[in-house]
Length: 156
Image (tube, rainbow, N blue to C red; front, side, top):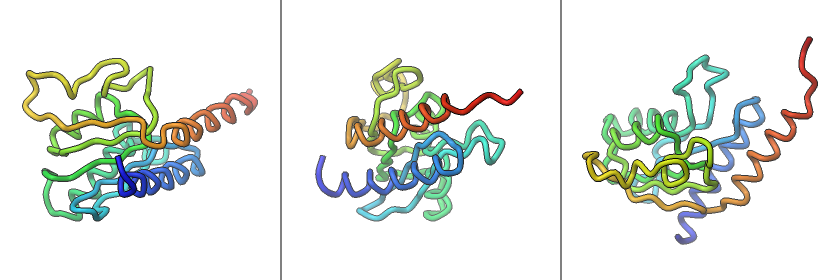
């Protein structure tokens, strides 16, 4: 992975910070086509009252609007956390060519942590997946967020 990959992951990290500032789990994502960001998203299921409003889904929706198509062939997705099963399904349906993620997710990640759906030969689309880009920074955002959340007293 090169400088351009790091640039796009830093953009995703900025979006993750925005999510965290709003009380959402700090995950951010960008969709890139031919070196240009065409979609941006960050976690917002709490704000939107929508369990599908993960960073990846929001970025895919934004890219679809930008490009005028629900299929995003040739696009790359940069996300700060390993995608879950729901997001991976959306990634596959969108025909994303490459997924680059930061931190692994040992509880819900399906790009190699819990499962590896991207390696499932029976599925009709396969994105190339690369993990670990700026993983310590992405993981640090998540760790800090959850540590702060644990420090808050529960409401009676």
